[in-house]
Image (cartoon, rainbow, N blue to C red; front, side):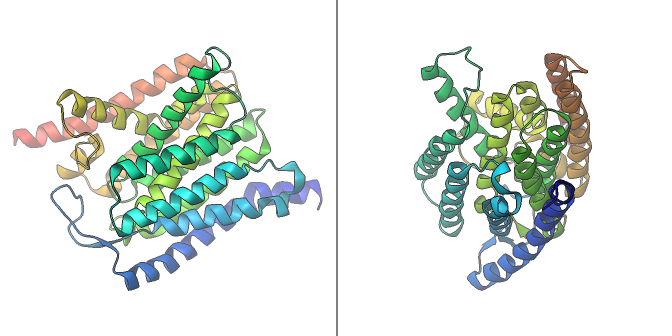
Length: 341
């Protein structure tokens, strides 16, 4: 295969295949979920009014695993394959689907995530903090950060479209940065396939959603996205890894901190995230998702500028934090105005 043909497949063909295959496999998964009667029934914390199929993320995860596992056949030895990470992702998907079918104890889920992250660590190859910390401290902190990202991705999957928008924004933004910065081509393949598969899910999950990701989708997607961000950080771009997911990091972390301060059972499901407040007080799911998508577009620009050396990395992080705080303030202000009516 000529280098030009390989470039076209990499830049266009493979992500397009991931997008189309995700649409197809999610639809197939929906038919299976209907037969299993696996639905999300609304409760007091829900942001939907009617039962919706749960577990459509299986089609997204199947797409990612299938294309990334077979990518070496297409791209040859030039593509680094993170087999341990893919194996751990498959394990998480199986455990999470079992949790979707019959809720598993929190401790079991946490142990499964810990096991997956420990195995996935073998694919990082380098310390996260660049040798600034001793190995005995660097590795546990990396595990902790990765597990937090997995769980915040799950926590934030609370309205139609939000996960598809966030995951596709972060990973496709990362794929763009790989093209601009001296990063391994394999990261482009992993990021673009993940982003395109997440975008394909939006066909079925855009408001009003016909299917939800379920834990089988949100947990593995948080796992692989967290891996990609950590990998970029270990390769010398920690600011990029902080800027791209800044909205999810900000909303989830601030909400968690508030719940801990109020001595609530913070590990249980709730509806206190900023984006959920905006929905409860009148914004449509689509409106909130589009606002987050617009914010993420700006974050991608900031991340790209830092990667190219056109913006000081930590100034970029500070600007990203400022943008996120503005959006969180808008979501919160929306609720405050409604409460005064």
